[in-house]
Figure 1 (cartoon, rainbow, N blue to C red):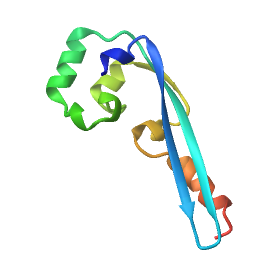
Figure 2: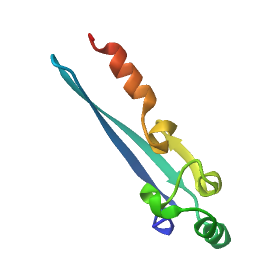
Figure 3: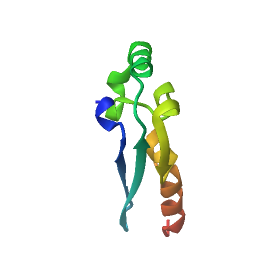
Length: 97
């Protein structure tokens, strides 16, 4: 899985739905993650030292492999980490709750 991401980018897309008795708001966050070429030794180290089976895309941006192969991201780091906190807070603050 990780090897298929090298020398390219992929998008991480999250959607949040906030519902109240009066309203429902749905927002989306998209982040592009760019991978460099993956060194085989780095890849083997990562898969042998980390639990990659519980990671969407087979990697964690905060893990070793994220540090060595991600060349840049366009968008929210927290979105890739697991939840677009900034988008959530802005949405909550904009709602008449």
